[in-house]
Length: 107
Image 1 (cartoon, one colour):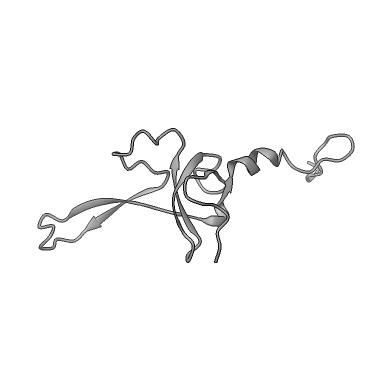
Image 2: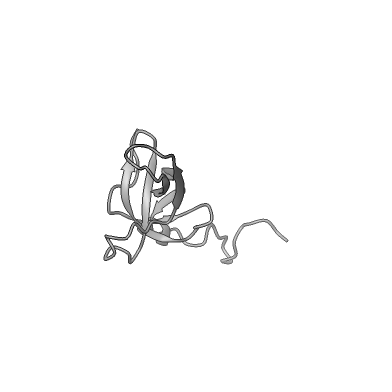
């Protein structure tokens, strides 16, 4: 399945706790329609794994990791939850009638 964003595109998050945050796409998984986004302005900090959504997962003790411990992993967004920033800026505030007022529900 194709995804409307590519690596290094600037996108805006449309849903969730991070709604409205701009960032760049780090990776795209087209098979699962998932994208990983890094906040805008963080490209200089390549050593730090700063992502918009990071989870901290506990790891069981193994021979490779005798102490066990925690690992920080990147969480991804579904591709429908992000939009290209150019398109987001062009869309405006929504539909308007002749008077310039929105056609939303009257309160």
